[in-house]
Image (cartoon, rainbow, N blue to C red; front, side, top):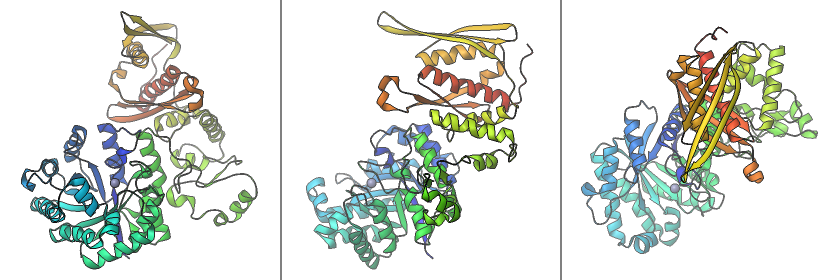
Length: 521
Ligand SMILES: [Zn+2]
């Protein structure tokens, strides 16, 4: 049984999608997830193209990885030798074990877009591969526009692949760069290249014709053993091949082993949702395998049938990709999941029923706990009576005024413990910042430990865009308390109220989780 190598380019091609902007911290966080899931290769970015990607590789170098980290770049430019080429040297300086370089495999692209002659292009490919191999770097060669190029001149497209393979590239990846090819064409050409070169082949497909997954599987069927794609299919235009669809298809439909940790496919849904949260994009409820609706059955004849014979309306068991069956009329949603995560909750107990009710009520309002585990833990521990009341909130007040064309923001927070009252004023760059500052000042008077609580990320998602400025918003706050990551959530029609809830949860969680006892009243 051949093993398929999963190559993720979420951090490079994925970020070309309109609406995505990943911070350095986001990129590192996603890379850690991909590593945890055993993706074979993680393409971190294009070091010569922007400082953020350079910083990513700098940070990545000092971290341990099981996946192989790849830097992306182009073959040398015509005016430079390989040794002088900035893109190639950017990769060498990134200190990565793997370089993925693309070269054009279409005569039209070479002559009319690049403006060079066909033989020079072959030399550029060979020189670039050899230069990187001389630096002991594993080379993945992406044959850009291969499938469109082969339509114009099949021999030339194959010659580009041969040039890369002969120069020592460990992988030759055939790219459907414009995403417009059909599976039969992909299958035929992949098989042809497989007969001509001995280097293992990969596929890099885009989804412009809605066929990126089908094309990737067709290539595998024809002998490709690397699949390049992105989590949730993020990518330029209509996106890249979606690894969250391809991976389970390889395993469950084609009987192949994929990735370094084959069993992790059973947690695929978590990977998809967490990456969506980090990218600050709403998860696609209709996505195959990992979408919220992928195993959701509405009341009626399906439900009765699925209860007796799940396979009646499910192509694979939901658990195989970390999903759960949802029956919309059922009262059981979430219970097993809670029991699984919180051993303290006893099956059949009143507390469990209370938590289930509470989660359902909050989710209906727009809360989501997948990326707010600390808020979820608080909810469970409060139901069990484990979280003491550390303080009472009397009021907060935020004002934004304009002074000489500059906005000035101030917040006051009044907390109470017993009969003692703590009032503080904070300023900030904006209302949430001012509120956070005032809250911290008031709390430090009661719990000096709060000084160790650091806010690391703040995200707002509008839940019902049609209501425009009156929309409900979900705020996700990430913090850190003495090295422990904390993730909390708040939802409200008022962005300050939503932020306030998330901030208070972060405070309460850090106090409770560190076993700090409430101040005597
Ligand atoms: Zn691409």
